[in-house]
Length: 204
Image (cartoon, rainbow, N blue to C red):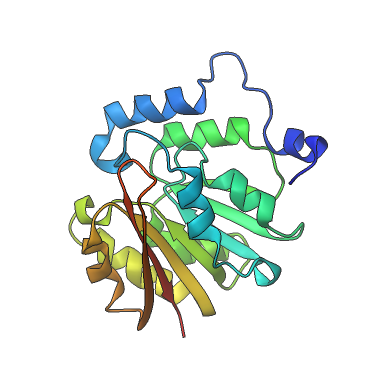
């Protein structure tokens, strides 16, 4: 567990006018229900199971698509090495603004942009590849062509042995993964609202 000093460095007290994570998540769900996908953030059990297969000792670059209010960001930062980098990408400026206000860890970078541009975004941060990419984006409701572009770009940006970690409420996401990843592990997390499909797509 991180020390109080470390925790304080990573998440500052919210400035006046900045909502709580639950308020922020619920507000954005009401504004963009198709893109946010769920009315509540992911459960602790889902987070632990999803991140449980990550080789943290050999993780220098971790990317997350659709970080929302940072439900995964803080657990990822708690597990990452001091010299690792977490890059999160979201098309929602409200979420990006919120994360920049509330997470001050120097290893953290919040980018307003599309996950389809992950290769350029990672390169712009000075890296050739990513070790792991995490996504909770609702692939089945993305605009036509965006899901396949994200899957292709993710496979390309991952290093050999890395993985695309995906949690979804629909198993249709596997249709986006199979054209690019031969080795895909699957599990369920029932203690989540709603229950989630979990996938680990490995780049051999």
